[in-house]
Image (tube, helix red, strand yellow):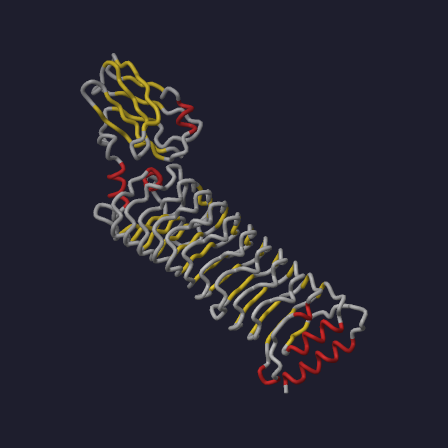
Length: 439
């Protein structure tokens, strides 16, 4: 009875509108006859100011087979829901350029193509494609440029994202899950995902090729069994969190070389989350000047090379949020990693025959070095990063029992982007090193 009342209401609304072409505000379409009547009564309707819901009522018969009644509509200011239809394509929406709300596909078992939406440029809400849709690609969305809210696709038959080549902006989440994608080709012009980029259970995806133009996304959440590296994220430079969890084949972080700033963290453990990636061997691709404010690195049983500058600098500052454990031998605590950080730069002795004051030092301050009795003659002073990379070298003459000098070439230290440095001092008989911190 409820459906019958709605159907009668539709007829009354159509009858109340004149043949002048004024568009009705919104309506539900439950059978093909209603769509055909819409096209006949509103041939000059170009903008529907409300919502369109298309849902076949099996009790009424007359399944919805085409959308030809909408052939003149170029804008729908509300949402568009396509639910339980018998549509095979979306022809009839060929003129549609603008949808102000969401577009949602649920239970359209015969919709093997999105053909008919080629002129659609803008979606003001979300685009949602559910798991029961049989389409194998995104052809039909070839003109789509912006989705202001979410783009979420969970489609076990979709092997390709071809059809999204003109998409460059997603205003909230881009989430792809449970799809047999071997490539992200189709997203090569995507520039911005304002919030979450989530790739989950894409079991055939080995890298992120196709995302080369992505410059902003926060956070990035990756959980794909076949993912081996992050190649494709090469132009991603900043974000909130990168979470890599349960990637069974992930071996390296190649692709993150240019990522340098975590703006703030949304996860309780902070910015960088590396969890249960059993084949991850090293994190050497991390940008040496990476700034982060939280680190979780646990369950990476093959990880044996994480004493890189980004992590060493982070761990050298007390009080930062850190959870480290169950990695390869010797990398299960922050202390173990910091000990590895000093390899190659000489022993960092607490009773070094020199001192730096102040330490830590602030940008703009001029630290001084004091040479004690151990050093005589020409003394070489080297500034190194925590991974042993030489940053600067200069010499001091020590002919007295104790000498204090301002560090020469101090502007170099002031410009240094790393937060921790090694000062190594040597003469013909001694070599000693000391860790200094820049606030």
